[in-house]
Image (cartoon, rainbow, N blue to C red):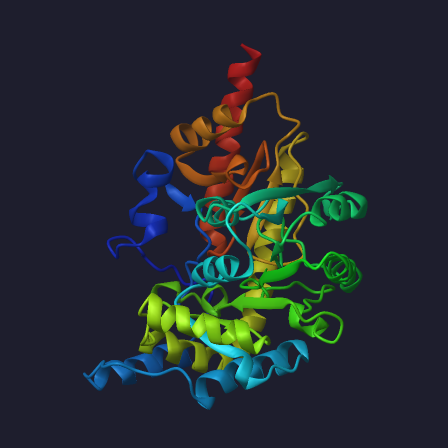
Length: 394
């Protein structure tokens, strides 16, 4: 590997959400975190080198994003990675993916109108819908021996009363990478009922062998009410630099979005570090993505083997994409609260509770870390459940 993903990086005392503020999520300090979805890996060397040059300039004034260097890097990435043509006039900067989602749902539907999303789901989706006073409609994902799928009949029955579908592709937390036939079903039914689609594709680079990510905008010839939001920050680990983008083919909505950011929210200037990180990572760091996928896949394999060797009633199927492991604990004789209590107070680890995402008695484990950290975490995972089973027998 060109990038050393085995390197241990101390993130403590850096105001790091995952490490320094672990108590906010788990009510206890000094845990080993496998929680919020950023990684413990350094950014690619070309990104680091370019950011150093920017800092050495010692002037960090107002900057612009609306140029071919920024938009071209994104468009070229979609050609290289997905064989997907993106017109530069569709691309715009946004401070974050969820900001883009919030702006778009306010543009595309009115208060009280329905927005559908799958369940389980990245919890921010639930919040952004309800906090913007739209009506949340959950479409269930079903677990068939580790393969998560949706019922076409249920999807159609629920989507026909909605104004917007909020899609996560690849899916957080299950790790599904939607197949082309599934996306075609989604597109055709949304077109049938005039439902607009917002697709969050921030995890799209991390897709494992045998699977293929298809950007939603690949279906523009079939349906034009589609909007893609994404960022390189998940893949290359720079969310703290602030920056994402939206791909909006509809000129009217594009201009409304620009007006919202510039004239209403006054987000007139790009984060210069986030902009450069996007350009360099997309232009020069394909090697990093390749190595990252290989490394995380081995991490997933380790988790799978560990669980199979140590547990009869906990199930883990490797995901098709993302660095998030969705662990099925539904067969264990303990409540989610009991599991969480043991993980925190016996194991000393912070793993996200499935209920946060709408998945009762699941756990979401972040595998975007060194294998050595993961091994320690899984031993503590076992220690936690050993304690629960020993207490249960008594």
